[in-house]
Length: 287
Length: 314
Image (cartoon, rainbow over all chains, first blue to last red; front, top):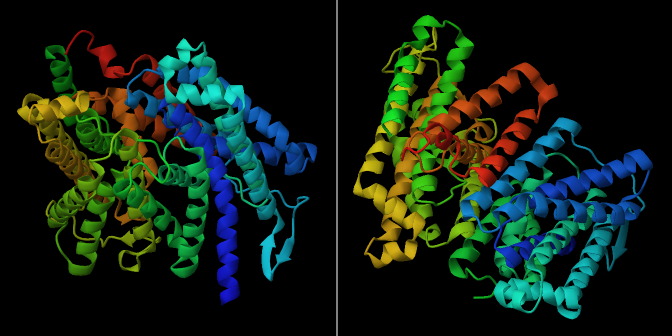
């Protein structure tokens, strides 16, 4: 009994790192330009399909296709910014919501049309199998995904805090006008934020593809989870998203284990409501 | 407005006599769906369009209307028209319970909270055995009559019932536009701080808008249950349905009286016809088309298609 509990707890923490990575992309875009990307989960879905097709067509394991998928998603993010987001950057919130929602439906529609609604999965990967650590059995893909997510989160954190470009990004997020006076091209920074924000789901999607089914609607739950993580961590806070990701992962698996698996998602959503009612700024949010 | 009103009256006349001339059950069904979605979208427009609070959870009201009717009929043999009333009461109750804390949230926080509430309702009904869980509920076949809200030999009575519901919704929407309420709603949308400084009780008027929205959506839920005679959570409480409502309003013209009606006439045929003619091969095509439409409109013509027709009119 106790073994199952600790096993569940560990799997929640592991998936939590991946949630954190997905949420970091969302929170970067939101923090920079006050636009919520409702299509975030759909980009994740695209990344998972890319990883799947790299495997089917070229026999590339997700570990090897990781850089390719990430680069493709980075490009997709930048293109999305220039074509669809730039025109509405100062538009009313309603237009912004409908554009990112439009992207959500467009990507889902394209996936349904080209790849049908079948559930697909990469049958065997380099990381398949289990390991036992202190008597707790853990899937290797989950472990690798968690490790990759931690590494990637760390990289983004380092990039934002210690590089000139990263600091420029943070400066634009803080105060567009002053950043402009300092000679920072905010337009290019926004494009970069979209690139990195979407690239993070490229990493997350590829890591997930080695142990998760791919289907056109796979993004919707992840997207909602990312909203919960971002709200809990505080909009715009990268460090907050990291901690919140773990909390959400643990809440999800524990409510599934202790109450009912089919209701676990409900508790994640209730967590969102509880956070925005009680502490709207989240754990580490500004304001 | 004059020109628009004239075109609208013409449309209503055409709709009213239409079934006498075209005897095709599929077309009737299509028009019934269009009018049902138009009614709900008008409901969405009250909270999302006039008041500017984007709700992605309105399907919950539709589901409550459908389930209240079905449960009362199946378990207690209570007439569907009373079920409709019960659905409305429950929906307004939910609107108030949800609205009270959520309306303090701004913008995106509110939109995401409504997604959460809608999804929670869907999950509860999917896992609740009393309401049939994921399997859903079959409504009993009864003698066909207006009192029983069931007709088996023809769709025509359903057609006229939903037409009347649509007219009711338009009348409500028109009354809001012409009354003080409409000005309050728009003030809350355009400048909440200004509205508050003028002494408008924002919380209260958002709640009123949400309740009106809930009622207009809930009656459609009752209609749907009686029309299809079988309901389950994914046909009545799906997030996609809530999304469709906002998209219909967005396409037609957000915050405009006839925007939702126009939007439903564009959107529903697009969905139903691609489904019929392309079948499973075309799965996703309708989504691709309407998402491009939504993106295009949101970027270049945020006022919607109605603004193209009624150029210059207010």
